[in-house]
Length: 347
Ligand code: NCD
Ligand code: ZN
Image (cartoon, rainbow, N blue to C red):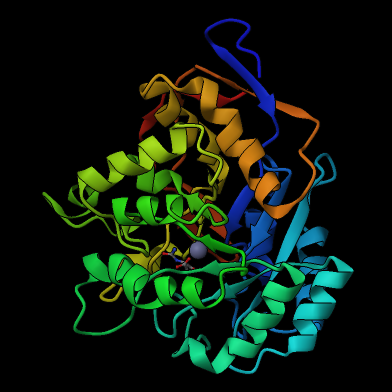
């Protein structure tokens, strides 16, 4: 990474280790928006129906590739959705062929399109054993779904009730705790050196007051839900510390405006177009620009055992007003922080 003047930051091209590209005509927005910043992305499988077979993953990959603009190169890294009936052969063949880079565990009912997820991990232990055997990572949405657990506690309780016992039972399993939101998760990950964790830009920038104080802001509603300031500070420290277990995952999760501004609004923030300026502004604010490349471009590929990208991209310290919206199929999606001004822009 070079900082030739104070205003330009050139780094190895980043990857996004957690993104929702959706499907159908949404791909003509989501794929270019992701591919303009990221060389590769771990593509979440929570479509309807879920991506739960090698054929489905391969066909989804083809649809994504068809939407990549001619002037960029982009590699979608495919995942399988852990359903109660996911085949062990899909895990073994998916890993052997190189098509599949991870299996996503959604606790049933935890988030968008998680109905096909898992109610009790015991039922899928043979699949998890096979994943540990072949070294295929389990990508975890870390929240319990029990109605009696407060939504702000669901991540911390998940560590205690679900992830801790799983790691004790199957220590060889490679695990990424996705979109972590709490100090508890930072500490849990650091206590398990073989794990990885992704951190979103929105969890680095906003806390729950931003979403709820002085008016409810549905475009800040995502899962896991934004937490207190002390947790945001723990995430900033983890992301900017150079600690190799933490890496960039936007969890860019578009929903049409009407589905978010609704009586029962959907969870998810759309950040793909401006993710890098969002993240780099945070690193700049805490004086850790020198750690941005490690977080964005090095720790992820090291965890997944993939080569580092060799091309570079540049960001400039030049104010950028976040655009209001992007087309989303026949509808419209609003960008996170629409209308706000960021200190950094893509060069
Ligand atoms: C994601 C989505 O909309 O698919 N939503 C979100 O709030 N993050 C699902 C997820 O990652 O939880
Ligand atoms: Zn997600």
